[in-house]
Image (cartoon, rainbow, N blue to C red):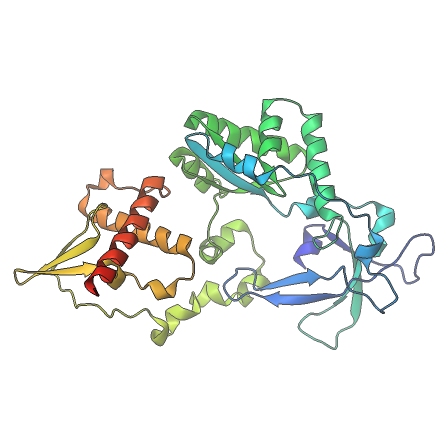
Length: 357
């Protein structure tokens, strides 16, 4: 079990229930995610009761709201300077150890052989704060604030001001400051037992460094490409279907995206500019105007934010196809690219509506 290997939980060897401390067994259930590299996640239900008149674990715990920064202030500071960064603390709750006398209140049962439902049950208990307990958010924020107070300085102030639960958002005027912050913040939080990871930034230098050190934020689906370098057991690798066959849709021809537009041959020249709302396709000396709605199917997206960003990437691809290799854009999307994508859809909508009048 991964949680046991990482010392987040431990087996309970004693056969008799202790009488000098509370004992509680937490129910749990699996949650499947087909698109995730962690296909099964365990959810612990700390609010479950074994009877109507009996309290749950959460009802027995002290409940206090976490000490969190105002999200408006965080976002304003995040957008204030040229280079922005985001990162998060890996398994933040599980990095904080539970007192020995409290661990028996977090027991749970597990099969000795998860592949055999008839195998004997074994008992585990948490050695660390678990996600789902009502007091966990406050414990996390209090622990981080204590760590920052014990390491006073400008860096700790920056981390504290940008902290929201287990995410940290900051911004800087130049890339040298970004790289310095990246190095020193990870070092400072490592002292407290935390790993600051999933870095994202509009700084090309930070993207390059974080990519080499494998701390760059990536889509879960693409993480399959570096399973071995991130560490995985042979048993887990054998059971990982995506490692051997790739995404399911790739092997199913009927799931491949279909092109319903005009057939374009190598003799067709397609041009598109960032400030243009149409694509001109020249074939047989005839100009055919294609709106962005014929290129991107708007009905596939239920999020305006996602639609505009995909459009911006399509526009960038078209621009890069015409640009020299040294002039191609490879960093994160810029604000002006997203605004151009929004303008493209507004113009397309106007043209479509006016054509119906």
